Length: 227
Image 1: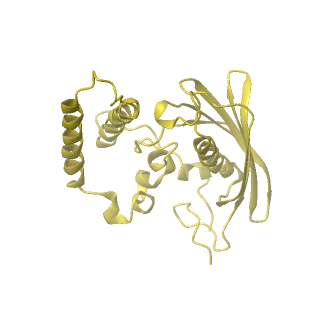
Image 2 (image 1 turned 135 degrees about the vertical axis):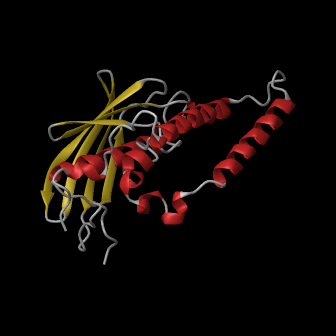
Image 3 (image 1 turned 180 degrees about the vertical axis):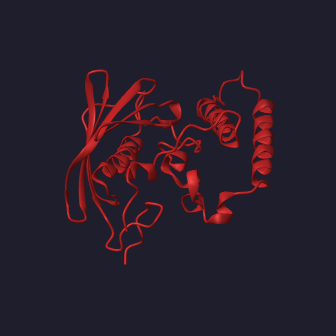
């Protein structure tokens, strides 16, 4: 089963319409990200941090979580990936590029002919070594980036073999630029490459071999489960 004429359409969504419910969700995500960073950096051992203030924040967060839990959920449709429409697209739901996912930095994507480009700024919530991005997020960013880049081949598949070479630590608080593309396609295998930089400094390189399932691609562009 074939992908759309531009296979990137299965990953990419347009900008939310001003005043739309989707835009409101993006605003909710942005404020949640602010809370996540402040919570990650909260110094509970500082005597200047009142215990009552922390207890009050816990109560406020519990009330917010309870209120959100009472609203209709994509879980009733099998989760975001199964919901269809924009909710199913990675640029909405992914933990790396998802504009509706408060875990995502997010990575911002754009396209230049057959190349996929991205950029992201990582804050303290993603820290591994002091002042640097956790290596797991370095790898996750490439998995998402190359997952989109593979669609320039006209098809798509699951991550098979994944290699990351971390040449320099990826700093927090600075713009990280990404570039990715397709090296070659052989049958059901799609070889992709990617790299990340800060300024002119190369930080990391990645290679992924994606495997298109024998059962092909479903109408939304998602790989069908293996036979």
